[in-house]
Image (cartoon, rainbow, N blue to C red; front, side, top):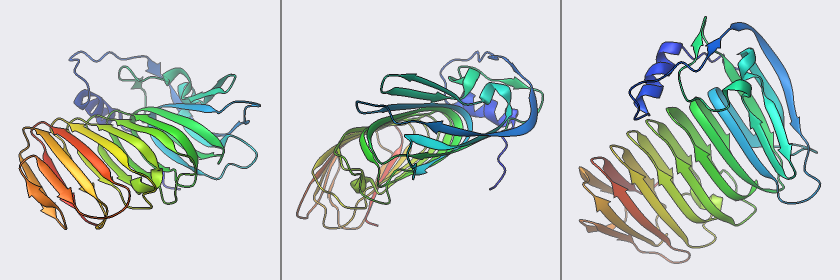
Length: 287
């Protein structure tokens, strides 16, 4: 496994890029040391649909299906005690957090580079999942799970979220809120969502709707200075309404229209988009 380090200078720049506050406090002193790896395992609650919350402040996070006999399992490797994983359970509500740095509201001051890597697996039982993260690299494979709701909120990030297989539950809502990030959402048709809401800042965002579209869905995309790409397979009926001061719309494939309205003809479940962009750009293309 590749070793990942987070230089404090880079982390500081990233956090400055995704906040409106000019004064960024140092949250605390962090003493780094040798790498520590510990197992993470959370049992399935005895009743109710699990509500899984992951608070991941900084580092590299890998999430995929495959937990056996547990709600969540895997490992955490870190070089600062403040990043040690902490599990809190209240009935069917489970929270896994990076210890004392659950929420990164300022810049940690450390005597060396911070290293933090979590590799986690989730069970296939029906659940809701919320991920709150700071400056991090994320590789999240969520295909084949049974997610009834998914919420992701992060700061300066480099993230790929993929649904390689159909979601085994009807997802009420998929919500993603991010800052100055590079975000790629892949296989979104497999997410089986009713409603998708994506909000970004000044980043590069790709929403790829390949996969098996089982039902019609509503999609809202909002971004400031972001460059947004929507990848939609041919033959999927689409209505797209655009609001805001776009710097340009680029079209590749079977889309028709101009100005603030575009369509694609097809049969079966329909995707209806509302796109609100500031001075960013929008690309519509087929795979």
